[in-house]
Length: 139
Image (cartoon, rainbow, N blue to C red; front, top):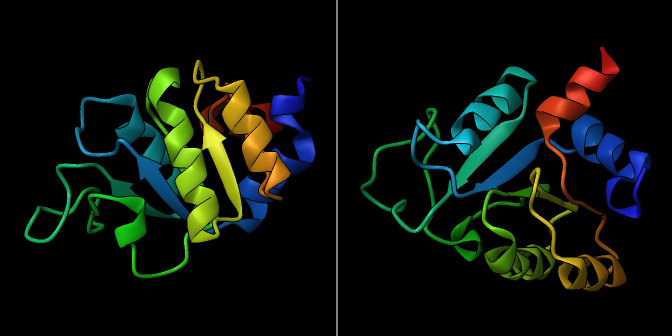
């Protein structure tokens, strides 16, 4: 298991963290949508984060969305990032700024510098895996 997928951090996020901001959640045809649905089935509160979300927009999976992570008016436990690797690091930095308890980069999303910065700031981070995969490993 890579340092990016430390089991204690996966367990912390899946077991103890309730509110998941999902970066890139807007379009029902995208993977972010199906994973957000899974998280809801597991009892998590999801918070859609997408530039097209915001005041006056239709809810996504029944939840109001926000254009930016900084716009969310309540604490977020995990920031789950569905962006290409080259654009993902800024969301790890934002997660640290808003005091998230963890950062999760989805399967194929890898930014080693962001990982080092986030962990150095004291925030657990998981990269290059998916909650669906991790839940399946448990059953």
